[in-house]
Length: 115
Image 1 (cartoon, rainbow, N blue to C red):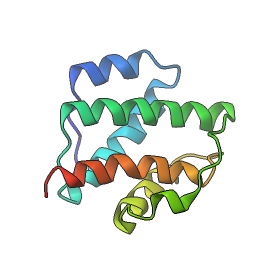
Image 2: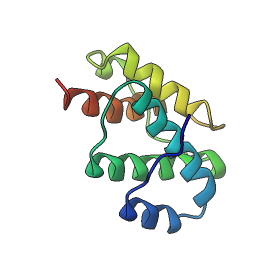
Image 3: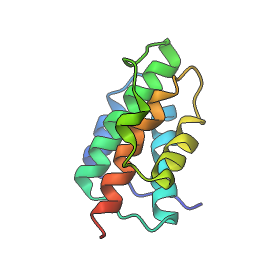
C-alpha cells in the first residue's frame, strides 16, 4: 500500500483529536482500501470518514459504545462495503459489531458516486 495524501482540513481534524497517530493510521488504511477497490473519495467524503474514524478510535481506546444497530437496516448496503468496513474495524479493539455497519455507509456512498 502507498502513502495516502490527506486534505489539509483532514489533517487539522486529526491534529485536534486525542489519538492523532492511531486515527491517522486507521483513516489511511480505510482510504487505501478504497483506492485499491477503485472507489474515489471526494474531499467532503474524506472529512466525514475522518470524523467517524476519530470517533471510532476514541470509542476503542476509552470503551465507549454506539447505540444498538439493527443490521437489517443495512440490507441494501453491499457485502463488499460491509467487508471493507469490517477490515477497518478489525484494526481496532473494543468495538461493537454494529460499528462496521455504520462505517460501511461511507464506503457505499462513495461507491454510489461512481455509478
